[in-house]
Length: 191
Picture 1: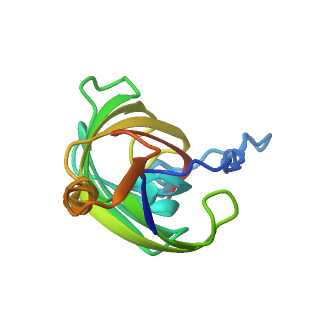
Picture 2: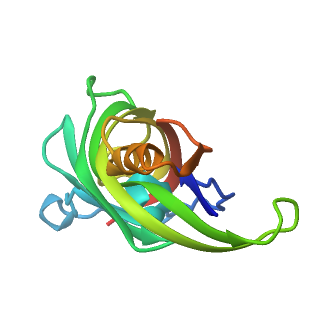
């Protein structure tokens, strides 16, 4: 008996801790000449989290393209190596609200080869990752800033659904334990 299930995302509880700001106010009253003041503005950040932007469970690099658009690259694992890349657009300059368009690993197909009775069967499970396009809405800091990220993503395309349809047409049992909506969260630090 071949038992199939689409797992779009197994959410695990991920821990993150906010890091205190590196710049502390000092009681030193010495003034610094203007030409010695560091006016470098960070245009990149690195983050850890769970979800499509992080390659399921992994890391993310974000780069500021301009004041409204960031580029995002994610690499992670969990079940297998996963990735994502795309962009985030912030419609208002002062808002944390953003829209994302990401391509990457967004679903896994779990295949179980089972033997024994239906009540006491033993199954050998294998997993296959699938990629596709995801559209999201969320909130979080821009690249070059630090803070918490949270996103709700809609799977626009994924080969997992096509593969499940194909297997169903061949007469296999296909169960879906996930839909087309995914959740992601993480924390990022400025570089």
